[in-house]
Image (cartoon, rainbow, N blue to C red; front, side):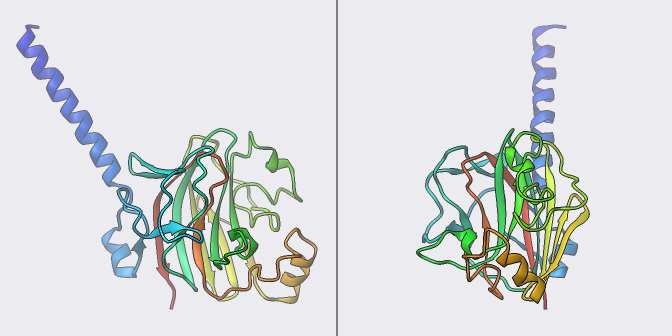
Length: 242
């Protein structure tokens, strides 16, 4: 093969690789026509963080969080702090995907209050994010209630169907009045009722017994946790329920 032909083939191959990569990324962080018709809102477009800000802050953190290849990434020991949506949500359905680094720990908060003197977990229920195979939290708690998909430290995700570190996991949270559902990788893994006698009894017997506001808000912010571990997020979408 002569030099000109070789360069032509190389250029074509690189072009196809770039096109393929762009098409692959374009499939993420977008709403389908069906989702648009159903009233979904894209909370992350792969390029900006306009719909997010730091917890108890006006702006998005300048450190600790970054954008990489269309993903929203919390960095290891970045010190950026938790982030929340700029809008509050009451009854909603949230969808997203997350990928954990080896040994990583994180979380997704919902109906969070913003309290100047308290961290976000003081008030907000949390869907746990965890590398179950390499983080010690998987063996702590009761009946696996600190494994991925669980209502953190309260209700274990069953079945436990988390993909290992380095692979994407899908999450869906449905908050419809007092009824809450956690879905992970296409399966419902947690369902519970807020504000019942059973709910308050469970809280009294948990680490949240000193948190009088925990789970009480009828609406609040959606939050992503900075636990000092690398977690990547994409395809973050929300639909408000009537």
